[in-house]
Image 1 (cartoon, rainbow, N blue to C red):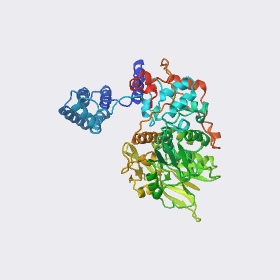
Image 2: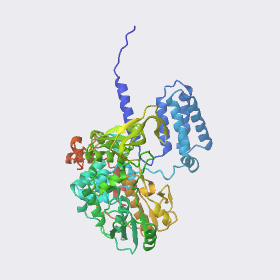
Image 3: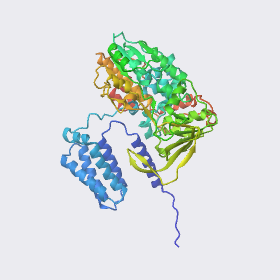
Length: 612
């Protein structure tokens, strides 16, 4: 038998690996607002570099398609060009030997379908659609459009009060978002081209830890406008609208059905992630802005809504999505079965459960499921199991939340679809019965679970928490006359409620359950549009000057992540889980910012000026 040698990778092969890694970073950091046809061309060229040249469709077809697509991008193409491109892409899909070829063809065909308007603009108007305009990625991807580079620069200069003011110019919850924001601003951070995205949330957290938000003054409110606004719901969206509307000089009344403000920030996020005293720092600041009063424990129904719509010049409905969804399971009415949303709502008013010695099973795979699981372990549960019908990587919960739950001793039983709840002779929960699944074809951008030919699994349980989503209590408002589709309030792009001139809607009750920062962005938009509806155009000055940028440090660094207290300690209490960031760590993170607002496209858009 002939001997076989094992050869190490050559320097050229290692360099190619580095190039590919760099290419992956570049793709991840692709900015918003670029021409999508240009992106298509880049991906097609990548396919051309990958092909082995064995089969004719791939070897000959991809270069021909590249030439046709370039004509579209250069505005020299005709309808015949696009028809020819479609024909060649279809042929490539059907005849290529391997995935490199048919995937290249399918990408072009999908682009021709999904980007039809963009292709038409290139053919007829000889330009990209106006909607595509490159901007500062972190600012654009923040739903509230917070000037991220500006407040990072202020933290770098140790002007922490200025940083809080800069955040608050667009988002009145700097503290809450510093602790629990899902930080979409980091997704396309251009620092990824060098090493990794900046820890933007960590920098903000350092600022609000150095100076409490309620110790930082707010801008002086504008002169009274004589206009009155009713805000229905005191969650992140409603309070954001109230804050900005109050600063604009409008008189605002917030109608809150509970005893305290905060919405799902108080009644949906456990204190170990968002301590109540830290949330109250933001709320005190908002109420201190002036022109805002609150009516607590006031549930608005159809009759009171009719009076409010008459008495006030404008109404903003932001009631959130605070009703837990249920599952149609046999035994779901048994004692010991609870809605996850109801459990977290009780905790919001300091009514903590006692699960000492009990076996808890949580159904679901989102952030609420993780919150309930981690709450249960802190409430003395003997064991906590999460039953989820998909794979671990399909969970909608943040990866860090899943990792933290596992570290705290919570068991993840994936590919288990609940089928019924078993009860004992007393009618109490005894177990959750699940049907094992296997992962199947992709549906709706996610692989769908399919029942496997395996025996049912029995998960012993004393308590079952159902965390499969949230619903909107829209009936009282629909009875009043507001339109809703599947309980979501219908509105136009300016958040006008369908059929009403002076009623606006926003946040989870209009979009469905999303994130805190998205709700905040809706509240800011509502305040601005209501101001415009009144005939005003107030501009708010945060009173801070953005520091001049330092010279970019382009040397690669490791990203500083926020550490948590040891799992063996934190699992036993509801104290805040994250450790502080040091001055050295935050200085390094601030220094990694490339100041795209000044050195990049932001210099052309005015983002660096800090204007609203």
